[in-house]
Image (cartoon, rainbow, N blue to C red; front, side):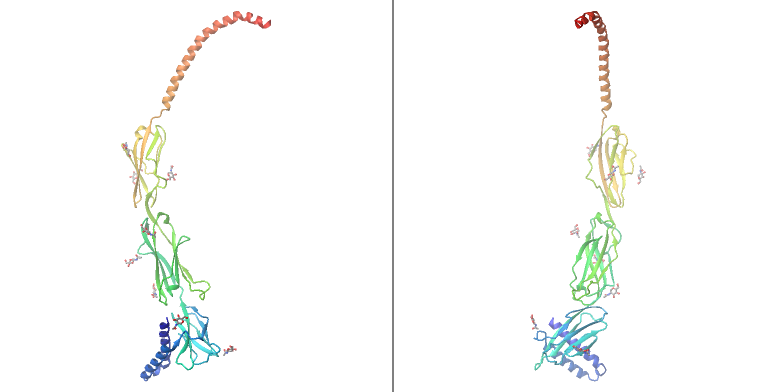
Length: 387
Ligand SMILES: *[C@@H]1O[C@H](CO)[C@@H](O)[C@H](O)[C@H]1NC(C)=O
Ligand SMILES: *[C@@H]1O[C@H](CO)[C@@H](O)[C@H](O)[C@H]1NC(C)=O
Ligand SMILES: *[C@@H]1O[C@H](CO)[C@@H](O)[C@H](O)[C@H]1NC(C)=O
Ligand SMILES: *[C@@H]1O[C@H](CO)[C@@H](O)[C@H](O)[C@H]1NC(C)=O
Ligand SMILES: *[C@@H]1O[C@H](CO)[C@@H](O)[C@H](O)[C@H]1NC(C)=O
Ligand SMILES: *[C@@H]1O[C@H](CO)[C@@H](O)[C@H](O)[C@H]1NC(C)=O
Ligand SMILES: *[C@@H]1O[C@H](CO)[C@@H](O)[C@H](O)[C@H]1NC(C)=O
Ligand SMILES: *[C@@H]1O[C@H](CO)[C@@H](O)[C@H](O)[C@H]1NC(C)=O
């Protein structure tokens, strides 16, 4: 770190020196080289960042949007001697007022630069130095989402890579990308560990496994520049367009598998439901063994009145170009015993009725006899009642 800063000091000084000396540089090449060497050696050997009374910056960190104006001030401690107190800065102007040197840049366009403030420590060849880090940032020009190396529909159970492209953003180490599936967060990616200070085009990726639940789902991504407390109150943020996934999947049945055997009573309605889900919508075809009957192309096969001829194995083939699903129904038709019960009941009834009639006739004859008996005895019965 210190080494870096020292190099920077050296570069700043060289640049400023060269700019000032531009016209006479060639005629005084040797002098330039010597001066430069002297400056370099002096700076490298003497900048002390751990000195007791360091100059300090207000603010202590600068975060500025690329192209914006910015300013800071370096303060010398009140007891410190104003000995070669000066500022080194990437661009702009400095102005001095007592123990304060202010720096302003009307348009900050340099990436990863810092401002250096120092003074000479009396009676030594050392300088007491402070550095102001300046973070120049650039919100993205655009953010776009798509599938990497893929266009068109997705297929279930395959893996795809979502790609979020962030254009012209920097520095990348402050960029955080979030992938969304509908309105829920799919993944928050940590910032990339990049040392590049300047703007870049960056791509963030996320692997996803397509499932049928993803059919019709919208994906988007969002890039946010999180620059810390010195950064803007509302972190710059940009959202991509949305893409809608189309997931193709082979037919599958929703409900638990149907009973492989269906028992139906002769004359009843036989219904086999083969309805399946798939994308694209599946088509149905029914096969029947042993007999070959003209069957429908519907998902539900209905036979109004089941007969013994309908007994057998039915296969429903559901297909949609992605795959085919065969569903088997083994139909058993059992005899309708209600007519037999009816006949048996009728027979029983006939027998009963016959018996009753026979008994009635027989009883009627008996009744006459009884009546005769009652008739004869009636007065006799009445007599005890009167008594
Ligand atoms: C400055 O002081 C810090 C501790 O305060 C120390 O870690 C660092 O090494 C010192 N740097 C130099 C150049 O002496
Ligand atoms: C210098 O700073 C003092 C206060 O510290 C202020 O009163 C004065 O106006 C400043 N001078 C200039 C030229 O800015
Ligand atoms: C896309 O394809 C290119 C070349 O065909 C390959 O270099 C790249 O790694 C692929 N990207 C992904 C995310 O698979
Ligand atoms: C980013 O990509 C655009 C084109 O898509 C290009 O014009 C621009 O120079 C790129 N920026 C960087 C920093 O590479
Ligand atoms: C996708 O499925 C594969 C196995 O089929 C698994 O290894 C991988 O972790 C899955 N990826 C995601 C993002 O779920
Ligand atoms: C067939 O089954 C599906 C579900 O698998 C159901 O939605 C549909 O109503 C059923 N149709 C009939 C006629 O029972
Ligand atoms: C079922 O569809 C096929 C073609 O998909 C057609 O040839 C056949 O006639 C259709 N059957 C019925 C009963 O509609
Ligand atoms: C129907 O299939 C079952 C086995 O799934 C088999 O035992 C039976 O014999 C088949 N019936 C006919 C009529 O093919």
